[in-house]
Image (cartoon, rainbow, N blue to C red):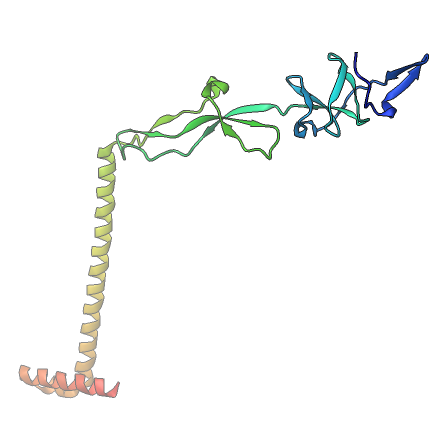
Length: 214
């Protein structure tokens, strides 16, 4: 028997001279979780929309009433979801001949409410067959092959520099010979001078004249 003292008039109904409470089925809401006065049925809450005390006449059907005249409401609890979360791979233990790399893997829980961040839980809560690998082999290339490849790259690089240097030397030599020929034919005195020392002196004189002209 419920004490009807304080029950709002809108929830009271007279029938055959008796005053009875009008029962109602709770409507679905998302506000029960914020109320301190609520009934916990495992997967759901039952409350009054004004957070006053709810009264149920039948727990299976959830028929009841609110003394204050507020509406009876029901809210499904947010469902927990558990999933594996894997971090980035760490550096391989060996550059060649096979090594091992590791990463952090843990089970995290969350609810359908996206405003609440996921949180770590025991690994037993997540399905074991879906667990990502915590370690794997890496850098399977042979160290001998890797060393030979590096040597070939260095050799080809040095050969390229040598070829470029030789081409530069040849171009400089050709330019010098061409310029000497130009000076020789430009200055008749060089062709008529038989003495080598005189030719050298005239060549130096030609260089000075050209530089002064520039």
